[in-house]
Image (cartoon, rainbow, N blue to C red; front, side, top):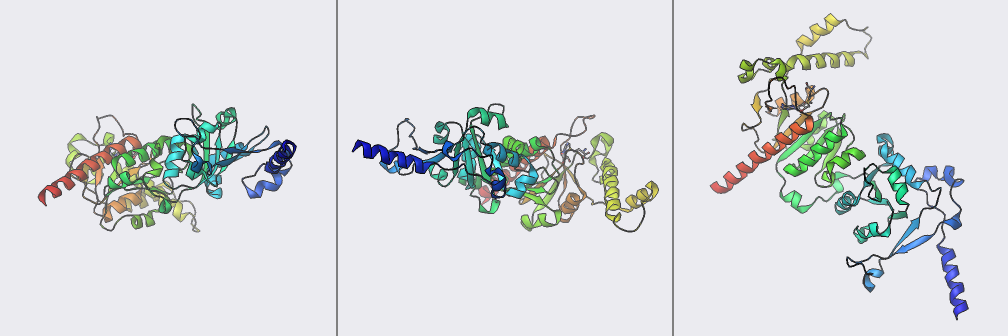
Length: 404
Ligand SMILES: C[S@@+](CC[C@H](N)C(=O)[O-])C[C@H]1O[C@@H](n2cnc3c(N)ncnc32)[C@H](O)[C@@H]1O
């Protein structure tokens, strides 16, 4: 009997041996030669453990998962990390990389699709919801390999490759939805990943109902944005790569769009602060200049030769700019529903954002700063306005509840 048992076990082990899987079909052929020999890769079985450290009971055992152990020369981790780090490849392959238990758990909870999970020890797997790992390509790699490719100062020994999340298919946390306010945020050309992540984190914290990103913003799924966002991507809808024309489609019809505007205060005279004329704040000159350049570049596709500086200046001076009133951030501006636009780090607000504010009956929001200070960091300005917006909207809800 023993001889038969041993022989059967050997057969089972032999059957379990599989060639290393390649994640990207188009690269399969190229990689075939480099793959380690099939006999060097083995499927392992992982049985979830309960919190006390023991194996779970019989019912749970049936949920055992099979994982693959990477062998020296296995380049799967390197390949997917490379893909996930380039915006172009991320978009082409429809994949995003999430690192660390917390982010991976948040994504799984929100219904994001995990394709491949690299982990350094089976204990890392025990920290994830076991039922969400079915059908996932699980690959055990050396901690040093994860460390090598990690974006974190202290690698956590776990990296997940997800399908790029689609906000229409996500289920955001119930508590988040219950605390959501008629407050949206529009990011207008935010280029810095740390800033965008911080803004998303603040937007989730302030109970924003959605964040809209214009086409020029840094990719919301870039690892640095994800890291700074601390899970905000999986708490509120983040809608990316939007042209200005379609932005109103994502806002309810009566939404007032308010623009965060530092109003180039360093150029303004203190006495002019009470004025609501844009030109009194000095910011028009900056925007005129931008608009002039914009028109010039649109025209450059025509047969006309380059325009002289004088002609440009003359044309720029003909451009009419939206007349928008100014509110300091602590005045009463947040009427539901409301959206705030936050300008980019380099160029500030776009002309399109000012036009949308004008057409929606919005206003400019100013956080007054000490004379000599140019402007605030975009993430800081966004946070101040979001939390002030939250305070004002909540006050209105409390007031109307008291009246009814
Ligand atoms: C770093 S600032 C842009 C500076 C840019 N060079 C300019 O002149 O417009 C980035 C964005 O943060 C917001 N912001 C910064 N300081 C602000 C302030 N004091 N009040 C209101 N918004 C402010 C605005 O939306 C601004 O476009």
